[in-house]
Length: 363
Length: 224
Image (cartoon, rainbow over all chains, first blue to last red):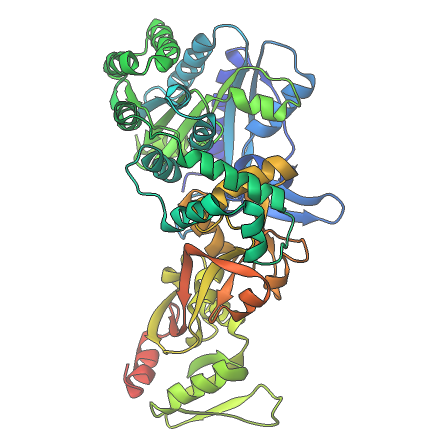
C-alpha cells in the first residue's frame, strides 16, 4: 500500500500544476442530492456510488465525481471562459472483492470555453501528459462526436436515429438496434404477430381485449407506440453500404494519423461525418503543435463508450495495465442538461493520485 | 461442531427436513409449534440453526453458519461476488421459481426487453421521471438490465405484494419471483418473453469460511 502521505503529496503536486496552468481552484460538497446524479447516469450509478438517506433532504449520494457539481456551479454563476481545478475525495462502491479503492483522491481540470474547442481538447490532453511525464502509461484517444455524426447522417427515420443515439454509450443495445434496423437480425416473432393484429384491428380494440388498463401509462401512449411500430415496419432497412460503414467505424482502431486517412475514406461514403472528421483533423494539428506524436497516438473510435457516459466528443485515457490512471473528454451536452436552458462547450479530465503514487513507487 | 442453517418455517422447512432425512440426517423441531428450535440426530457433531431463508446468505457469508439451505435467488441478490463467499453443494430439487419482469397485459406493444427499453424512453419524456420497476431483487435486476443496456428506468423497493404496485400507481412494471404465474395474471400482468433473469431453486450452500475438514466429514455422511 502506498502511504497516504505520499498520495496526498502527489495530489498536491498535480493540483499545483493545474493551478499553474491557469485554473481557479474550486470546491464541491461531498454529500450531493442523489436525484440529479441518478437522472444523469441512470440506475447503474447505484451499483457504483454510496447512496444514503437524509431525513429532510431525501436520498443523498457521496460524491462519485466532481464534474456534475463543478458544471452546476459554473452554469449558475461562472464567468466565461473559465478554467477550474479541484482536489478531493470521491467515493465508489466496489461490488467485487478486489484491491480497488472505494475512497480515493481525485484531481481534476475543466475548461469552459466557446472558442476553438479542438485547441481546448489538445490543451487538456497535453496538460495531463505533462503532469504524468516519465510514468509507464499508455495514452488512448477516441471521438464520440464522430460516432454521433455518423448516426445522424445515415439515411433513415429520425425515430431510428434517436434510438441509436440514445444508446451510443451502451454498445450491446446499440448493436442490437443497428442489426435490426439494417435487416441483419429478424423482427421478433411477437412484434410480427402484433403488426398482423394491428393490420385488422385498432390499437384501442386490441388494448381493450388484452385486459383492464392499469398503471400510469394510458391507452393513448400504448396506441402511439403501436402506431410508431406500424410506421417503423414500413421503413426500408439502413442500406448495406451505410451499415457496413458504421460497423467499420465502430471497430476502427489505429494510430491517430492513420485513423484520419481511414475516416476520410469513410466520409466519402458517409458525407455527414465530414465536419466531425475535419474537427478531428484540426484537433490532431493542435495536438501536434503541443508536441504530441500523432503518428503513434492510439485512436479507438469506440473508446469511452462504456465507462464515461456523458462524453460526446474527444475522449482520452492514460492507462497502466487494467488501471485507468487519468481520463477525460468533452461533454458539451452535459452543460445543457445541467444548465437549465443554457449551455457551453466544456472539456475536462481527472487523475487518480493514488495510482500515480503507486506507479512512482514501482518505477 | 458444524452449524447448519435451515429455513425456520413453511414448506421450505418441511422439504429441507425431508431432503436431509432421506440422507440419514434427521431434523426435528423441538418445543412448541411456534418455537424456532430444532435438533438433529443420525449424524454427530451437527447443530441445527433455524433462520429466515432471507438471512441465511448473510449468515453463511459471515461464517456464523457452515452450511445453509436457501434459494439461489437470495444468495445471488444479497451477496456481492457470491462465488467467493459461498459454494453450491447440492441443488435440492424443490423451491423452483423464475425471476422475471412483468408489465401490464394491456401493453399490447411490449413483449421483449427491447420493447421495455423503448417504452422507458417515451415514458420518461412524457411523465418527466424514469419508468419505475418494483422489486426486492435490486442487485439481480439492476445487473441484468445493465447487461442488457436498458436505460431510463428506476428500481423502486417492494418487499411484498409487488404484483399490486402497478395498479396502485407506485410502479409501471415489476421484477419478481413466480412459479405458476397465477398471481401475475390475477393482477393483469404479463411476463416479458425474453427476460428470464434467474431460474431459482433451493440449494445447499457451504460457507467459504467453514472449517474444511469438519464440514467435509458431515457432507460425507450424507453422501456429498
